[in-house]
Length: 290
Image (cartoon, rainbow, N blue to C red; front, side, top):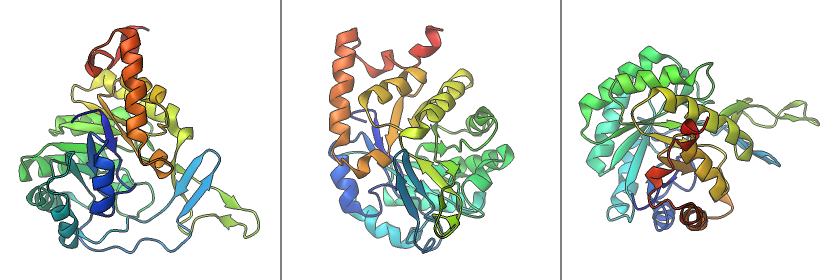
């Protein structure tokens, strides 16, 4: 990676054209989460934007792994590594999806074990440490490329899931996915989203993401990718100091597709001012200065 900024799954990554555009400034890009078969997702409304962030319940819409191969072909020669995000019901599905992503040329796979609003997938699978272990082991046996595991914050102790992933052979963990949330429409007297409860992203979840990364760094040896609530270069430095080696950004890119370039400029200026030459020198500093 040319820098520590990664396009998070679910934003600007349905089509190769937008991923290629973001890849001009990104260190890596993660695809939309892809499953075994095509899914239409939930009926609108699926997104609700408000002053503190975004609530969404898309329902994991995607074209299915076979059709997505066409988009992956267009990504050959991409300026940044392409990480294939996948979701499934069990270890057999995850292994098959990972094999296909590897065949398509993905540099790594990210296991979506954390989506909070799709029945039978994501968080419902990823909250069980035993299932996390089984899925990671199956994928590691199926592919040669690195395996990232995206963890859910919607548990009492995220470190249990992180340790399960590491013990099964995960090459890195990503923390966090969206936080379960709800808003009510006062006129219709129901949830603002068709699906009811959705996943909350944006600036409001920054402290939660930082806390999760900080806790995971205490117990894990594998690299951690921080994700959640990043809008400024200061947020990036916070994640690095909490223990992340890289960061994924999604929601903030909705308003500024060239955000990575601006964040990189700020991070470089901070490091120069503090006398740091490499990002690695900043990682986990908050653990040393307690």
